[in-house]
Length: 264
Image 1 (cartoon, rainbow, N blue to C red):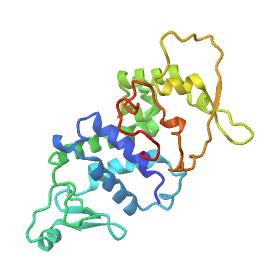
Image 2: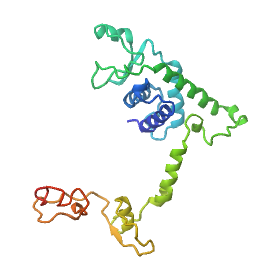
Image 3: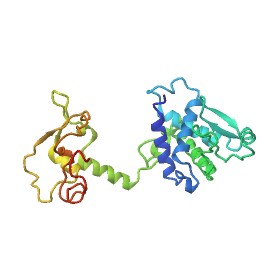
Image 4: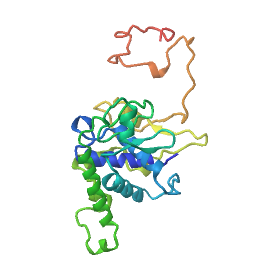
C-alpha cells in the first residue's frame, strides 16, 4: 500500500543507528516501534500521492522529522495503527487498561492491543530532539538561501544528517572490486531466458577455489535455470549433484548418518 515505507524506515534506522538511538536497551526506538511510527505517519499524512510510487521521498522524510520532532505531543498522545490508524489520548488508554500508565512513547501493538510497544524506549525525548535537529538541518538545506551557504563537507543533502563511515565505504569498494558495479552484474540470458554463470564465479560464491588455481585457464560456462527447480522425487536411487559434498563437508558419508536420498 505504501511503496515508500521500506525506504523511509531504512533511512530512519540508519539515522538512529549513528546516534545510538536504534536499540531499546539503550533507550532508543526498536525496529518494530519505528516501523509502526512510519505506518502511522503515512496513514494520517494528508497527501494524495502518499500511495504513489513516484512520490518525493525527501519531502516525506522532512515531514516525518517535522511531525515527530516538533508537533507530536508525547505527553498526552499515543499511536494506534488498527482500523486505519488514529491518535489516542493517553488518559483514555489509562482508563481502559485498569489504570495502566502509558509510556512516554505509547504505541499500541496492532496484533496485541494490550501491548505497549514503546514502553521500553525511555530515551524517547532524545529521539524527539534528534528528529527536530534533522528537520532543521534538512529544511535549511532545501531552502532558497541554501545556495549561498554551500556545504563543503558532504556531497548530498541527506549527507548532512547521515554519514557514510569509512568501514562502509571500504566494504562498498570491496564489493565493486570483487563483483563489479551493479550494471556489470546483469548477467546475460540465452534464448531460453536462462542465466549463464561462469564456473569460477560459482566456486567463489561457495569458497571452493583452490589456492593454486591458474587464473589464465579457460573457464567453462555453467547454465543455471532462472526459476527454482522442481522438487526431486524421494524415490531417486542416487543423490542429486547438489547434495554431493566434499570429504571435509559435514554432509559427507563419514560424518553424516544420511546414507541414501530416501533417508534424506
